[in-house]
Length: 174
Image (cartoon, rainbow, N blue to C red; front, side, top):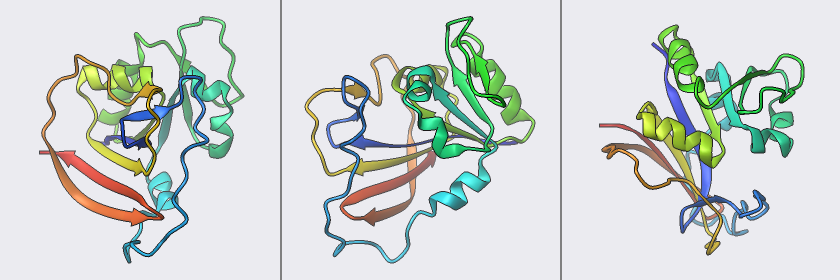
């Protein structure tokens, strides 16, 4: 059995992007004095993931380019939305069912974002692990990580890392 893993950064006040979708604020504090000896190995994490799921807005911003050569699934409700060769598009209505089938087949799914895509997975209560990087910034407004109406999900903190002022918490379901 595979797993669905949410891995992303958020501001201390719970936003994953500015209102316009920009993520230029996702930076450290230029001070590594408190860094932990161990660090999250993002490349190893990526190597363990079979599928990357991202919403249409993230895809349009060019974020898929960072994952060239990887299996990318885009969530878009536009029937005519076009993606690069090798990438797949599913509607918001079918994405959960498709990814649960992939998980049942042993695939690990990296839930990249954005907000509405994450919200669909949250409301379906299918995320197995949460890796959240708390960026040392308060945005004041933006696209929230979690919308209202989600189920309660008790979590267990498995690991924590500090890197350049960013606290990375790795959680699994209790």
